[in-house]
Length: 187
Image (cartoon, rainbow, N blue to C red; front, side):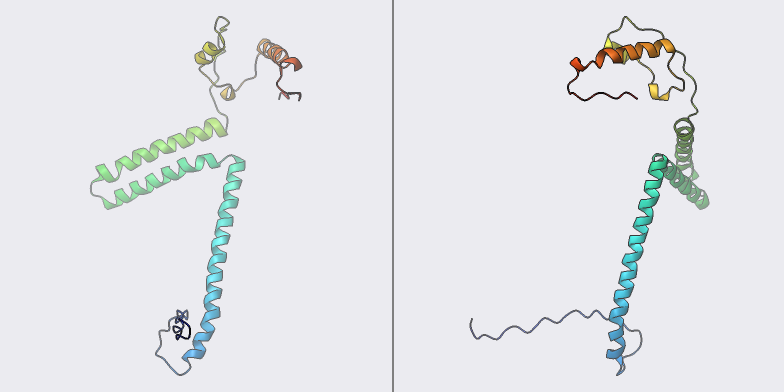
């Protein structure tokens, strides 16, 4: 409606810090300084949160590129299980439920962590015997018959096996049999 009185403006929410002392005449002047103080405190909290995130991100990338990040979940779960077992032991009652299951799970996780670090990170693996020839098998039957992964073998190919592999590479990388015109790089 034209000429109708407008609604009174909404009262803004009071953002001043609460005061623990009784009201005085100078209350307005004291709380005016609280607005900037509140924004400084809020800014410091945001800045602290940003710093924590940045520090965690740097730690994560450092662990990732040094190869230790993959061991963190197992180690963290083992430590958590041991902490629960310690709490169960401290309680003293129902140790069959509160101590032994977390202790056993934590011990198994710790063993898995140690084996992972020894075999994958440090490269301490038992040597495998040379497999016998399987010339009678086709390509797919040969893949099914395999028992080990080449990346976990700790010795080089024999000269005869390397020569056979390089002959296959030479045959199957001829330019006439390739899909594109770019050369293949073998490393």
